[in-house]
Structure formats: C-alpha cells, structure tokens
Image (cartoon, rainbow, N blue to C red):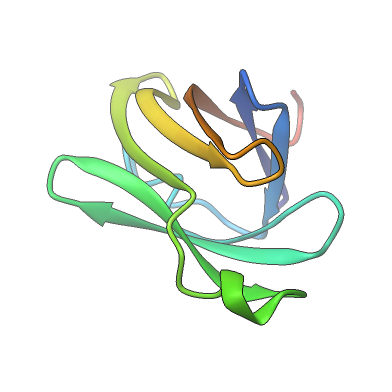
Length: 102
C-alpha cells in the first residue's frame, strides 16, 4: 500500500509503504519525489517533525527541515514550519496523508 503526503506551501510530496493508527499515519520513513532524501517523521511531544536520515549532501543528514506539525484529525497536520535551504527561509506548512485512491 503506497500513501503520499502533501506539504502545502512548499509543494513537497513523499511516498511511504505503510501507515499506522490515527495521528500516527505520518510516522516512519518517507522518500522525497526526487529520491534525493529519506526523511523520518517522528513524534516530538504533541507535534511531529521530519529528520533527514539519508541525503545526497552529507551535511543535511540529521537536520530537521519540518517541525511543529500538529495532528488535526482526518489525516491532516497543520501549524508546521519547513526550512527551505535553497531560499534560506522558513515557511508555514500543512500535511495531508493520502490513501492510494487520492
């Protein structure tokens, strides 16, 4: 089963092989569309964040480009922040975990 995640504002998409329970669907390893990075979404208190676990640029590994995502129900996460290194800026982001049919 392949699920995708959309991060609005920043136009990222990720693919994962499986999902877990309500609120935790985002947890686990996700690959960026260009296949250049593997992110691990982890829970940090009441919010979720993404940690770069594998990347073409070694200096990126271990960094947290996405943080503060709060689960809103219905496979949606809001109020997050994403760091965009190409522009050296931080932007707001939201995520929706999609099923195979979406």
